Length: 265
Length: 343
Image 1 (cartoon, rainbow over the protein chains, first blue to last red):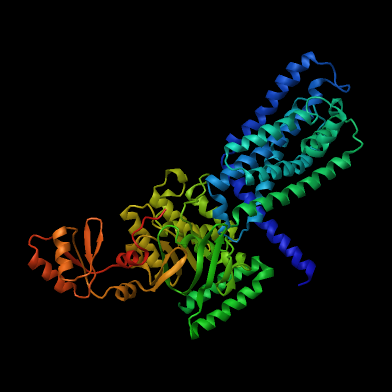
Image 2 (image 1 turned 60 degrees about the horizontal axis):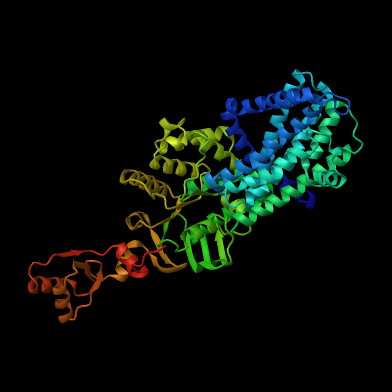
């Protein structure tokens, strides 16, 4: 077999293994589908109702559009982040530590690398599911154009990989499930507030803007979603996508390394 | 091992080969090769030579060598911390060795983990069933990890549920199963890939006598069908009853190896006398220069002259309670590993 053929089939084996881990999680999700699908529907309505329409009453137009329309892409992106991050922070930790699901899977031909990639892809899928539901709600409320808005969904999956992989890193190094509240409070919450979600990122001091785009995947997803959902052009959209792709790869590689260090002893 | 079984093995590998096309070619050749070898000389399924496992401040396995042959039920006995579970994890290729050689199916565990794991079944010490899934789905989802086609997985699941008397529980959530049922389900799940080697880490820990006997029956049945089984246990009656051969381990080393009967015969030539730890009896034994051991409120005499000693005691000290019994594996175990409590 040629070298490229060998690499190709090795990649196939890893993707297949990851796919089976993904399917295991999807099977569990589907078993409790009716329970699992309600929160993603309610969440956007709560945020849009309270912040968009409620606070929006006291806020003038932002960047030439009603406040509720301005924050819709922000909350859309935020819901992707929360779904993906929590799946791979708490969900992954529970499966690894409490349910010993990883041990069970590792006694089969599946390797740890495939387990982690499968977990991260599943976390991204949770973000994607939230994105789809949120998109549907926004379309029904007439806040988003149907066609260009739909382009946000694949981007949500890409950003979902970033959020999940970062969460998986925390899950790998956390000493206990309680300690996972630190990344939630110190990373996820500030990210939700300072990624241009509720106000344009341009109102922040320049160093903070740079830091936001350097460190916060959400800032990129918000920028891309806002551009697509409101029609305001973003001159650096390619940079956002590139940043997300590179961050997704790095975070996934780091997560795999951290789990291998923890579990292969 | 019967020819028929070998063929079944090969057929299973053919299906594995289809899935792992890049690595399967060697696999099949090797299987056929080892089939020939087995007929001429017994080929070990597991071969360990001078195996070490070091953690930062602890040597868990310290220079262990052993071989497990086709169709054998092989036991690892030892107190807590003896290194049994570490060896099981190394055989499963989930824990890399520090030094030495370890091969399973004549394949190196560090290199061919994926292929080795496709041919083994593992029952872990701690139940790791999927609590989010039903009994049936636990097996079916597991089957996917071995690339068993869905229809085949359903057929095998049906067989396994009935073999372990779980058919009526197929839709039950894991949380409502008894300890015995969980163990049976773990065993059923471990057999979904028709493994050539079954690894059980404390298979009957925490079970009531009925559940233990049920598991034992199933294990004996699997053995009679020609399966190779490796188990760890610290129940000595279990080891004596099930194992063809076993090793007794302590502090990462193998202290003795053999069949249960051979081991008992090797260390005890006669019956054991047990009597009360009474000053009168002690004086009597010392006076007659008979060696004895005390364990709590018990005196044990493991002397070659035990029948004479018994008579002696009965004659000299009236009203003494004396039990004379054949030695067991437990006596060997305590002799070799001592009575100190392990953490």
